[in-house]
Image (cartoon, rainbow, N blue to C red; front, side, top):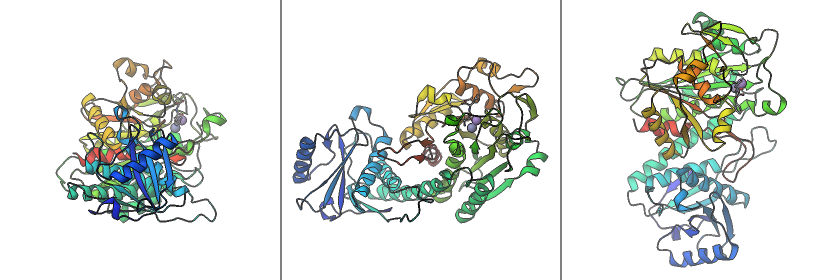
Length: 490
Ligand code: BES
Ligand code: MN
Ligand code: ZN
């Protein structure tokens, strides 16, 4: 998607289509009297609902300089959230694309309360770029068409708008490039291939890359992640990417991603339905990769370290058995009572290694529990951590970035539930309720209390099982947008 900005008004943009956002059934435009009349009559005639991510494409028959109009709904003002704008832009591009449209224009001026011009440009640009994406690596004969969108002026603070646009462009490049990896199935995105991909991305973007393979993991007593990979023909890895920061004296923040290339459940084997989509169990790591590429391009002050805990969870004669006891990197022993609770095992070692970087904060992202879908559906990720204020900071960044986070508790009772019978810890709780909190309670054992730490359970938000107006089915890279928003503000 080619993104550009001009100070000249929309009327000068003779494109195939203009994208006009609609809130409370009204087009968001001021001035443009003739155009507004045309739009209002179309909205009335067609009964266009203007609900979020609803679109309407119609030809103008020469009444204005664009051949078509794409109306993009934002829903009702009182429910507005940034993701509705980003999704509406994406949905508009997707609807236009289906109608054969390649070149779009829209207006920079925003009538949306509390959304600055720059925030508007960022969300629309990022949404439009996402709307241009489809995962067609395995579709024979598919061609990529280059699309474009121009933001027509005037923009009151043109420097801020330009900055937002160029940042959105770099962010989108990272999201789209990583999506091609994140959408690969288990036979393609093996731990080795993810490692190669990360190494290449690091090299191209000036990040330091290192990887702990099976032998190094053994030497470092990372026996929890090794147990997860024990049944697989693919070895486990912990990958580390480092961005120095423009303020190298600052303490780094560490991002840790669960990167299970396929989760069969292991000997606690999943049933057919539950095993579908488990190539997306690497989504936490994919969000970290996308965030690291963004960081490398946007060059914030704070040093950032990204870690991927990579393994494939398979049953076999060499697989870990329910009841097995292993000792993790920090010396704590774990009873593996259910081999399908593998995410927390790979994260245990990675989180324990993370503290060696003496971080100012740690954030982990993981498709950890089906329970988060029961609690929050597909709309929000859960955030659970050891510092309520830190959680709030990330929730706020998520709101600005169009990703919803909802805090769940972590209490001493939850910690007790994860204590083992024959070892320090058990990997499933004694009570079978509050599954998402239980997972977080287990992880809390691998992070020092004095380091602010937040765990994002993205099992409900990391991928779409069917296409939506704003996206194809597949990886969403949920979390990457929140991370970069937070890091830019540090
Ligand atoms: N990868 C799954 C969680 C998951 C479920 C992700 C649905 C995406 C969609 C995770 O490893 C898992 O299997 N969790 C178990 C934990 C249980 C055994 C304590 C679960 O949620 O059932
Ligand atoms: Mn599992
Ligand atoms: Zn899993």
